[in-house]
Image 1: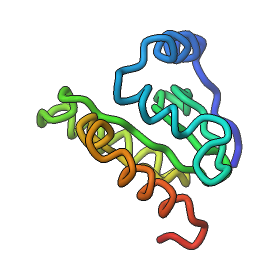
Image 2: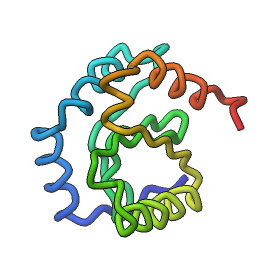
Image 3: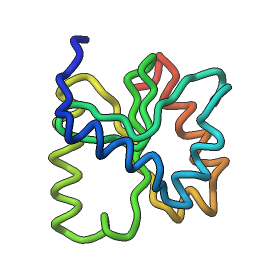
Length: 122
C-alpha cells in the first residue's frame, strides 16, 4: 500500500495529541504498547491521509478508535462514518470503542482487537 502524504499541520497535531491522551486512550495504550497484544505492534495518534487515528497496527492495517461522548451526536456520527468509509476504501479495518467500554470492559475490548487482527477475520 503506497504511503499517503501527511500535511505538516496534521503531523504536529498528532504529536500534540500523543501528549494529551484521554484516560481511556492511556488505559488501552498500556495494553497495546510494547510488547503489545499477542506481539502486535501499534502506533498511537498516527496521521493517515487527512485523518489522525487513535491506534494503528500497520502489520494488519487495523485502526482502533476510542470515542468519547462527543461522538454520540448525529453530526459527529456522520463525520465518523465518512472518515471510516475513506479509511476502508484504502484497505484499513476500523474498530470503534467508547471510553466507557475501555474503562469498564478492557479485557473484552482487547479480545475484540485480537479477533479482528487475526488474518482470517472477516
